[in-house]
Length: 620
Image: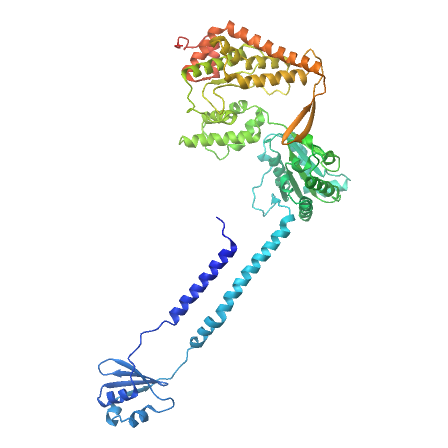
């Protein structure tokens, strides 16, 4: 809990006053009183021969008696002790036997200095300190007000900033992107070489790619290779509720970068402020548009000799304002693709550094099982594998943990507490067996890696298919095979149990979406090579309106018929396979009910007729 500064100062002052009060009480606490007698009593004691010594210190008399007791007394100022005692009737003979010592009186400096310090100077010091603290806080508050328009960029990448230095060696894959950026690094290191040839280095570099492919990491690697200051800021950090603050922060950011040149400005999530101006329903956003205008002005204002490179990253390049993308601003666009199988293997090796690995780790197999994974996904896989090994109190990470981590990242953690009833378990087994059997019976489908009826995430079971090779394009035959595979579970339920369950709902959604894209986007239907529907980026009430109809109701009815035909043909194909191989379907389902999980090797043995568990029976 944060304490209010005023309360904190008040408590501090009270504590100081209590300490001072304690010091005063210690210095001026009443001391034990000694035996004080009058001069007349002293004369009587001398006459009775009780006094052995008298020590005179100024007007103070310290009297030592023969019985070892001590007393004090006072004499008149300026008078002689002997005369005073004689005049008061002291016996001269007895007085002569008393030893009289004269002690020079020395006044201590602290006797007057300490009271002066405590009563005069110390209170002034305490009050002054209290006033200085309040003035400092007031000044800090004023500075914070003026800092409101300062850019909150994080500076690292150069020497002395204490951040980890990242180079191209720390970025696996992205070979073409790194080749493009080598020129930027060379310019930052040797700008005169390019300027002497009249060459103009790109002022802005835009990194385009899906989330997690390594845009920010690659930008930091450029700064690490060039060894220059790297000013990183997110696009959302410019925009505030007050109009004009964003543009002021842009000016401050570019001013700081020019002072530290050669340097790199990196704006992450550029689409937060770089959206197309004037788009959308309900007007524009004044503060965002002013911020964007200021960025355009600053990028145009770079002198030819200014060694400042602006880098930005976004996964929504389609919605950026055209003014940002014209030559002279972000005129170099670098597209970052998801890593292929070889790049994924190298990325896994980088993220596995520093982790205790078992000798049986095969990163190639892990890479083959993770098609479509980004660099961030692979980092998550390596981390999840380490967590799984630590949870089991292992000292090394095995291949098993990596394979388990892939499924956890894809589908979520196992939910063994989600216990299915005997009937539900049987339905789930036949459903997943239907998917696997149809997939393995149609050419053009991906190989089945694993079948399981253990709940993960929201799925009661799953059939894991992993492509054997990277594919950038897909054919109509492959889409039809995928449709039949998706409907395999639905058809297996209807064939075995005579009814359907809600477990096939997600399969039907995916199948319907693929069929509609085949007709409307890919031109793979008899309606011809026509794209139906216009994609347009508009946002209203938080919802994206992504398509506008550019066809008639008559054409819409034809589209619906073609979509239905794709689905019906896939359903017919799946039913034919399952009816023809019903015994094999039951064999796979029975093995699933018994073991809950079937790996690729065992599944291939079952469909080839080499299974050892064919005699297992289930009571229905």
